[in-house]
Length: 587
Image (cartoon, rainbow, N blue to C red; front, side, top):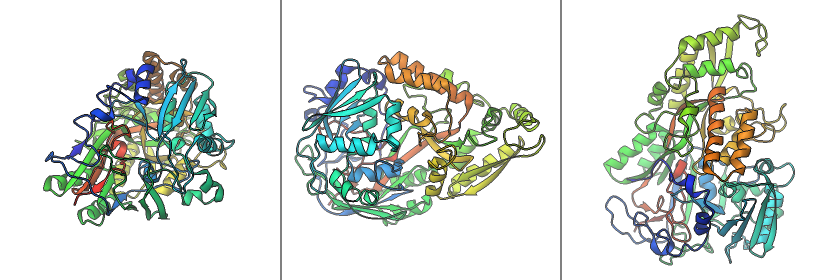
């Protein structure tokens, strides 16, 4: 079985802030043991693969695979698409990110050739690789990147503009044919983080302008595979990009596969059964029962798996704009009786991941023990205190739900119709009923729940969402935390990622410090302040860490062993996101 550590690398805290090291990461790395000419022994070079037998297998061209995922996205337009882990994995087949993280937590150029900051971190200069083309033959140059920026990310009224403005971004300018410069209002040590995801997925301006409304259904990027077809909530098909810009270390033209079908199979048991029956050859899962099932299949032979547990956690997401959850007493009461051990057992996550009490696991450089100690129930359950808080709210003549003193407290809980998730919801229903809160359970499919939680610009206030509590996953991220924290806690009316609708002046101040300081000690204190406020104010009720797994038929190789263009080892499958440009079927 192939596996990865629970963190990408604890040296993120030192490396990220070092301009000298970042410059080396973006350059040629001559003499660096992680350069393309000195690939670490733990990495598997494209063209060869390892495994438990540690034997070399020559890569071969041809063949197609089917990848089973739990969900996808609403559209593939980087301007407005919802790229959760399954959607991001699919998107990375036809898009390339400008920047990616290496196992040490360092930003490295991927589609970009280099990226360098100025002395005070207020400007970042990115240079593209020469000769890269989009699938329609359009050249990826500075002008194309500027078009993406002006129309998809920084235009008035688009989703990403608010995120970028919160980060202090003021604009982007062309330096030469292959070089652009991002300008900021002040220092931002974590700016490359924004170019790891959809802001850093360049699309063809030619294709977009030809059909702006339909582009989200027919994406055109620079990735290793070209989009062929999409049947929403069913399957998406891609084929080999014959003109892909990347080659393997041994000189092979990438990718190896002729094509991939990403098949949406929402039910985890059905998805696992499909892998066992060879109806699909790769499975993505974030559910404990399925992970244990696949690991059993690995033990029995015929399959391999890449297991990862990082900062992502299951939780109950609270809409802090929806009474009675707008009242801190109710939020704290719910947390005081949230039995995380029992939930881990119900979800069958026990033994795979630790219990969660915040955005970061204990081995993250951003974890603060003092901050999470303030979380209600962090040390032990307290049903007596929970009951006191509920009764105090219930008797309040000014209770926020508008009901009369003494009336029942009712809350609606939305969750997907997955057996382990519904068992979790039923456990919560029993726990919370014991302190005087009636919980109504509603089953909704994944796509509907995401839409309910994210909300729309048409509601009052905008992005309020149409939910009270939802079963959810949240993460501090595997890279720098600034981007995620801005997404979680930016102004709720302009930040779709602020799905709890929670804001706090202390968090606003800490976000500024996190963005502007280049000293890790300052940034750590700022992140600890955010964690403290979240612990005290409880917009999330934490359960346990989320294990993620990519399981695959044993002859499908090269999935977790991807490399950067310079030969540096990749990060495997964090958050259940695999890359397929080095994957092949052994002959």
